[in-house]
Image 1 (cartoon, rainbow, N blue to C red):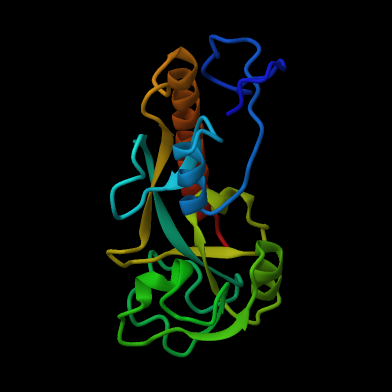
Image 2 (image 1 turned 90 degrees about the horizontal axis):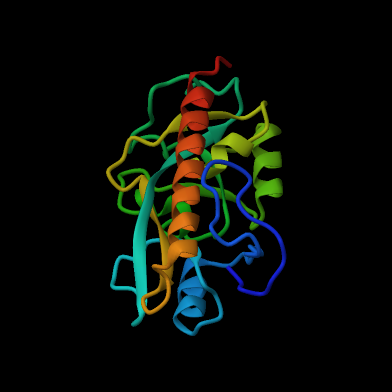
Length: 207
C-alpha cells in the first residue's frame, strides 16, 4: 500500500480513515512480498504465512485459512464428491506449474501412496484451466481463486491434513498498526469472508 496521494480506497464495507490513500497492486510470490515489506518497499502484503518466522521487523496478522480444491471437468467421475483423499493422485493426469510432484500446490500429496503423475506443466492459470476444461487433466486450486473459476470447471475439496494454506497480512512492525493499516486489514477480512461464502456456494452448485 503506497502513501502517495491519489483518491482511492476499498470498494465495500470498511471505510478508510484517509480519503487519499492509494492502493496499487503488486503481484509476487510470498517470500518476495515479505522481503519487500521488511525493506520498506511495501506497506502491506497478503501472503501465504511462512512455516518459519517472518523477516525481522515484519508482523503477520492472520487473515484466513485457504483450503485447497481439485479442479476437474464437470463429467469427471469424482465431480460432486464431498472430498478426495490420498488415493486420488493414482490414475489421474495432473496439470501443475512444475514437474516436481512435491512442489507448489501439489505438495500436500508429496508423501502420499500415489504420487501425482504430472502430464502437463503450465505456469499461468489460463493455461491450466483451459487444459482442465478440455478434459486433459485435473489441477489443484486455492480456495481464494474458486469464485473466479469458469462455470465449466467442477471443484472438489482435498481431504488431506496439509490441504490448506494460512493466509496473513504482512506489515511493518514499526508503522503498520495505524488507523489506515487497521482499516485496511478489516476490509481484507470482510473480503475474505465474502470469498468464503462464494466458495461454499460454488461447492453446492450442481454439475
